[in-house]
Amino acid sequence: KHVVLAGPPGCGKGTQAPKLKSEHCLCHIATGDLLRAAVAAKTPLGSEAKKAMEAGALVPDEVVVSLIEEHIGKPDCRVGFILDGFPRTVVQAQKLDEMLEKKGTHVDHVLNFEVPDSVLVERISGRLVHPASGRSYHEKFQPPKRAGVDDITGEPLIRRKDDNVDTLKNRLATFHSQTTPVIDYYQKTGRVAKITADRPKEEVSAQIRAAMS
Ligand code: AP5
Ligand code: ZN
Ligand code: ZN
Image (cartoon, rainbow, N blue to C red; front, side, top):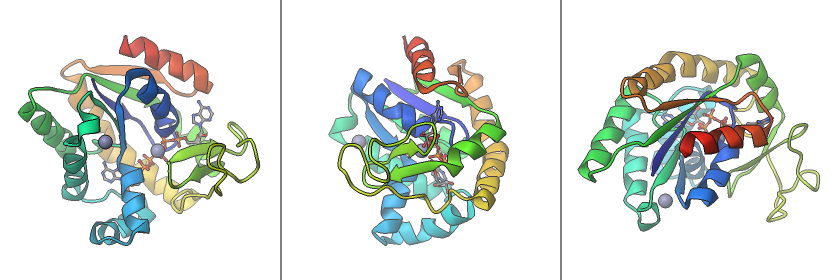
């Protein structure tokens, strides 16, 4: 299966992906996590991406498309994959369709997470992340077992550099102008399931399970 998780910053893509991954044995590809790893490792790709990410703008299509291309060829992605944060432009969606067509396959499900902007601000401003795994927590809604550290590794949690009010404003504006057309693109072929993601985590998971069955 090939699943696209679509939705604004903070809608819960990264929170829901691990569950979906284990239930369906899919590979989880989060472009944001891959880009942050490249920035941290100071690779050429990372230095190209850094400025756009810190400004809440999109990294150029060629850069993320090459990341995806590299990743979906890996053996662990043969069963299928969950794309988290990709495609974010219509060009990226077209490139993805081309890549999958070459493999004789296609996108099966587009899960469109809907959450009002006001809720997103609250979610993003309380988020804590474990950088190595991409696991996210929330000070209020999903606190770690021990304050400030990851439940599984015990390593410290951090705040993402782009999780501040100003950058979030830009990320939301970018989402509304550049990524909502992607939903329209998929809507044409009827592959979109609406997920009401402004609900408790377990309820969102249940909606996803229903959409995937
Ligand atoms: P990316 O890392 O993809 O960020 P994003 O899309 O802004 O999404 P987030 O990771 O912020 O949100 P999420 O939906 O994963 O929310 P989460 O589950 O953590 O991208 C970062 C940057 O990289 C972009 O700005 C861009 O520059 C670049 N980039 C990435 N992909 C690109 C592409 N394809 N093209 C070009 N550029 C690209 O949840 C958020 C918080 O809410 C957490 O604290 C969580 O605990 C809490 N929470 C989750 N669910 C619930 C719930 N049901 N109830 C209460 N709280 C909840
Ligand atoms: Zn995420
Ligand atoms: Zn993989």
